[in-house]
Length: 291
Image (cartoon, rainbow, N blue to C red; front, top):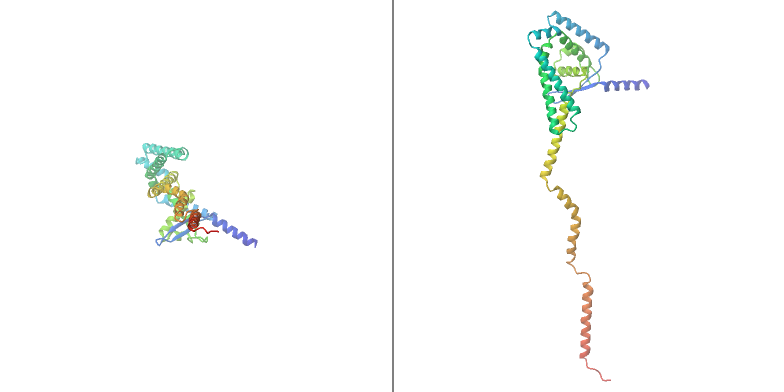
């Protein structure tokens, strides 16, 4: 019993420690996959894959990173002006990010929106500047070897829900016919290796702020539309409070349709007086009897 309990807890820990990602098929089916921690053997084989590809790239005449940087400088792709521009954009981006995270609590909605849009613009500008170098650098010996290591780890640590491997070996991963699955898995493993979440682009400070602003504006628009469609909502609420008292006042005239209180006694008294007068008149007309 104790062994079964320990096994169950160990399995639960393994499942909870795995990172999940999904893939939507053309049939709108959602497939669930998980990233498990690599074993020591997985890491050793991944490092061996790195060394093998690096050495082969050297033999095939690919440039190293330092050689590529030197070549880009000779071709005037990397210049002092480019380096200075890159540094200025990085400084500006850091300053705007600091403003968003620390200085905009008391700012107006328009000021916060402008700051968030400026961060997005600077981030895009920095990406474009880096692409000028990242393209050529992707074909260096180091980058090719790093891609091979990532591919090998992807083939070993991506699992199904039941902890079975998505691919039996590295060769099966390389020959995967489902290109979307292979690319998605590799991208998720790269983010996992860098300590980034799958939705990190959606949760940047500027995107979170713009999303909050859009949500607030939507709520105000809905509230304004509700007031325009029912402008007398407040007066109706007041009328509902007054209605019970007014209904009691309206009931009072209805009671006057019947006989007023005391009318019965008054009619009876009139009848009594009229009958009394008739008896007195009758008495006067009758002749007096002689005694």
